[in-house]
Image 1 (cartoon, rainbow, N blue to C red):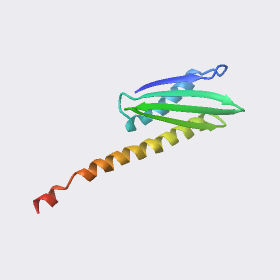
Image 2 (image 1 turned 120 degrees about the vertical axis):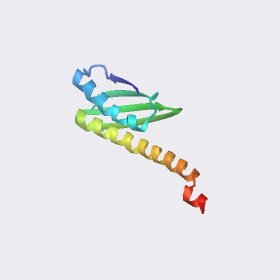
Image 3 (image 1 turned 90 degrees about the horizontal axis):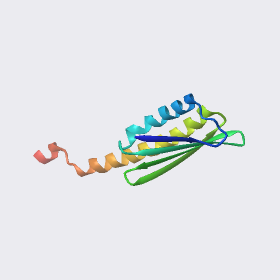
Image 4 (image 1 turned 90 degrees about the vertical axis):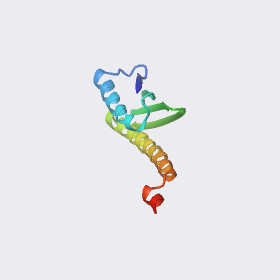
Length: 109
């Protein structure tokens, strides 16, 4: 998965901020195709950190926004929204696949 992190002009993105962000976004790989791309944009507005996470995966685009009083809270809110949505999507796909197949026990009877 390719990840890009951008910071608002004037907001100095330090090495630990970038590493922390990459680590959190990498946890979403389990819900996405390896060819997926993610773009993270971080801003500071009215003493709040605001994050916009855009993900492109197999012809589908997702956008998640989160905010918080500090960087950790902002990233936790954004990643949790993304995780819930992507997990629901993955579960729907699994359910659709499982409905197509009939257990062998039913065929043998």
